Amino acid sequence: MKKFLMVGFLGILFVAGCGVKIANTGSTGKNVICFGDSLTAGFGASQGNDYPTVLAKLLKRGVINAGNSGDTTREALARLNIDVLSKDPRLVIVEFGGNDFFQKIPQKETMANLDQIVSLIQAKGAMVAVVGVRIGLLTDEYASVFRQVARDRKTILVPNVLKDIFDDPAKKSDEIHPNDQGYAIIAQRVFEKIKPFLN
Image (tube, rainbow, N blue to C red; front, side):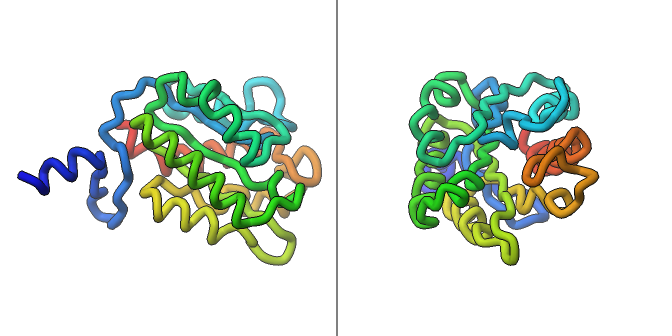
């Protein structure tokens, strides 16, 4: 009986075949929300080709775009309640980190902020997907941050979402932002990771 109550309280489901446990799979929230910086806002995309809009078409359901260009994890925490928690989230796709790197925010603070963002969303009862963004020219300096937050908080992980986009000019609108083709790839990668949890 105690074991059953504990599993129910945590809201964690074992996903058959992949050995992954994701928190809050029983979420009763209504909305899928993309919460991030310029990559989520769709900087460089033509109208209707930002990744949340393309994702909505793949999912065949509405998706809220809560992206804001230039945001660090500090700004994300400041607007989390208004832009995410107040909107009855079922699943929140969290994408931050690039601006922390460019603004030289200590990596430990970025990790702590991401962890707090995820924790607050989960306390609301929603699932979370953490989107990993390659940061750094020679090495992927934040990959371990995204992996650890996802592992510790039992979230879905979309690793290295910019793979084969960041170094391909044909898929970018400028030095760091995708174009329509690049955003379509991001949407597909996110879709493949979250779809099993929305059926």
